[in-house]
Length: 86
Image 1 (spheres, helix red, strand yellow):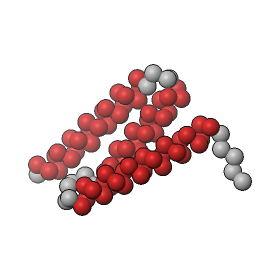
Image 2: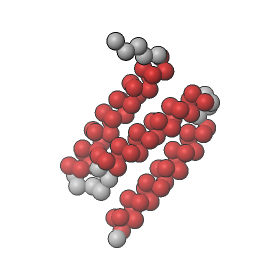
Image 3: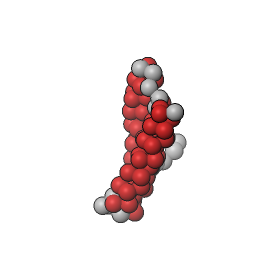
Image 4: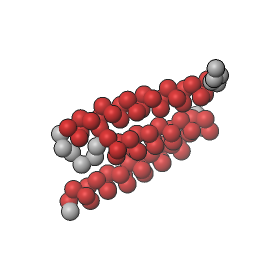
């Protein structure tokens, strides 16, 4: 039997919930033929969740994660728009 601490349980729960939301959003976008599908949303949402979770362990104010996630979002959006406009 594996014993999970509270932090590990929260991390796994949030990771599973983020993957569930990734699948719903990504599947809908792939069904409609959009550029960003399941794989793109998996990287963005899972990365955002990990940065946010780790930031809450380091500093409860989440100021570090907010800046990192915002930067990653702008980079991802730029890549998607660059691919669409070509």
